[in-house]
Image (cartoon, rainbow, N blue to C red; front, side, top):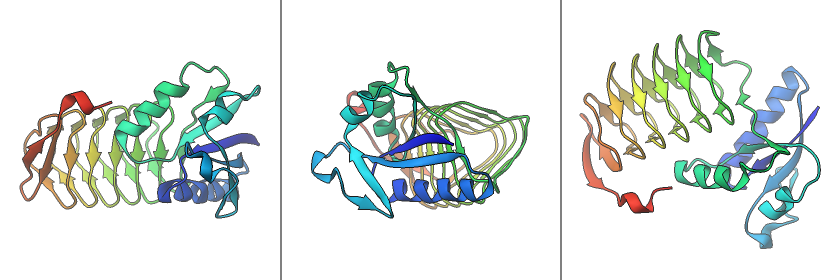
Length: 220
């Protein structure tokens, strides 16, 4: 077994712990040591049977190899955490994929990704790094999903779509074939995307339209 910790201590981090338990039921792979939380007041608390081990300083000070999965949904926060950890050679970022995920061996997947139960990824898909694909999503052929994107449950992504860096794709949202979503755009729950969405905006509705734009300076 390989030692692993979850960076984060919120609801999704607890779901990642459960996902790791399911992976171990199928094939014993991970020794889950606990969580990392940058609020020092939480160190020592127990979440669903696993301790909060400490802050990032605990992690950075280790003198042995450790696997880290970032159990936080926010694309911007994921990027900030990776930038904090990336220069430490003892920290590795595995992919955590539910055993029942249907995924073609023609797909390309980077590092640090989390793919939850019930997902179907067809063929010739490219997934970058630190992408989350939450429960029961479908992703079609030749789609490209760039780093730090988070896809929330029950989303439907057609073929030849491009989700650029840091997209936050809402629960039960849909995007038609050949359309792209710009960097750090937020797609509202239930939105239907039928044309390109610009970067740094929030888009909602059927069909989805931008309703506000964000200050790019505040993006990670």
